[in-house]
Amino acid sequence: MSGLWAAAGFVEKKRRGGEHSREEIEDFVAAYAAGRVEEAQATEWLRAVMQAGMSLDETAWLTDAMARSGRILTWDPGLGPIVDKHSTGGVGDDVSLIAVPLAAACGVKVTKLSGRALGHTGGTLDKLESIPGLSTTLTADAFQRQVVEVGCAIAGASTDLAPADKKLYALRHRTQTVASIPLIAASVLSKKIAGGAPNLVIDVKVGRCAFMRTVEGATDLARTIVEVGARLKRTTVALVTDMDAPLASSIGDALELDEALRVLEGGEGGRLAELSLLVAGVMLDLAQGHTGEPRTSTQDMVREALLGGAALAKFEAMVQAQGGRLAAFPRPGRPHEIVAARASGVVEEIDGRAIGEAVVAAQAHLPKGSVFGVRLCRREGDEVKQGETLAEIYGAGVADQMAHLVRQAIRVGRQAPPPRPLVFTRFG
Image (cartoon, rainbow, N blue to C red):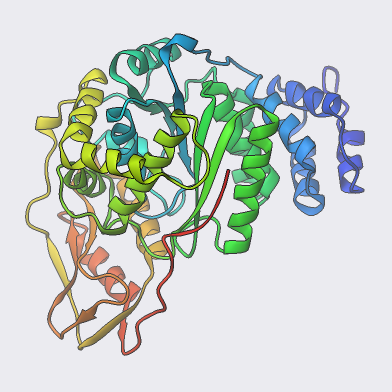
C-alpha cells in the first residue's frame, strides 16, 4: 500500500531481541502518528516489545518521540519551581484532589494533567466534574494561565499534547498489550514531558486494587520511570505505595470527592490523608531543590497548610477558576442501602477491585454528578459485631444490586490480614 511506512524490518528486529536505534524509533512514532503504519504491524511490534523488552535508552527515545509528536509546553523560568504529579491508579485513589491544592498552598506551582476512569479505577477528572459547572477541558494556554494565576490546575491533556501516545495507548488497550514496563513508563512520562514541568512525582500503586499487582513489578516500573526521567532531564521521584485495599473509604466519583473535601476541611482521612500529606511534602521538597527522604520541616509545613485551611482555600480557588460552583456540589445524605455483618469477627478481605469495576461500569450510565457508590464503614483488620454496618450504598434504583455485590466482596472471619506498609520503597 502506497504511503505506508515499511514496518516489517522494524518489527522483526525487536522480535529477534534486537535494540532499536533512536532514528528507528523516531521514524516509527512519526509514521504511526501520521497513520502510515498498519495497525496489525504496530500490534505485532507491541507484542514483540512485551516479549523482548526495551533498554532504558530505547524507552527514553520512545518517550521523547511521543512527547514531541505534539506541542511541548514551556514555562517562564521566573515563575518559580513547577512540579507535576502522577499516579498509576487504583481504587479510591484520591490523592491528587488533596495533594495538588495542598502543595500549591505551600507555594508550589502544580501542573496536573489527569485522566478518566479506566477498568476498575475511577478518574480524577470524573470526580472533579461532580462539581456543577466545573470544566476539566482547558486549552493549553488556559491551563498555563491558571497555573500562573491560581497556582495549580487539574485538567485533561489537550489533543495537541503527546498525540502519538494517545493513539498508541488506545491500541495497547484494544490489543491487550498494556502490561509492559517500558511501554507503561514511556506512556506516563511522554505526557509529563509534553506538560513541560521539570520536576515530577510519580506514585506507583501496587496490590490487588492497582494495575501493578506485585511489589517486584511496581519497583521495576518506579526505577525505570526515574532513570528514564533523568535521561530526559527531569528530576523525578517515584514512590511505590500500597493499594492492596481501596485507599479511600469511598468508591464512586461524588463520594470520593466528598471524602477528599472532608480531608481538606480538616477531618480524619486515615491512609488517604497520610499519603496525600507525604506526596505534597515530596512535591514541596522537589520544588525547593531537595531530593532524598522528606524533611520534617516540609512535612510540618504541609500539615499546617492542611489543618489551617490554606489547602481548602486553594482547592476552592482552583474550582472557581475552572467554572465550578463548589457550594452547589451535592454532599451525600442518607445511604439507600446498608450492608450489615451477618456474624461477628474481623474483616479478613475486601475485594476492592470487584467493587471498583462494578461502580465504574454503573457510573457510565448515570448522569454526571450523581451521588452513587459505596462507602466502606469497616476496613481490613477491623473487628465487627453481628449486625454492625460494613458498608453504605448510595444510588436509588441500583443500590439493591450493588449491596449484594458488596456483601460478596467483604469477607468476615477470624484472622486479620498482616499489615502492609503505606510506602514500600522510593526512587529519586
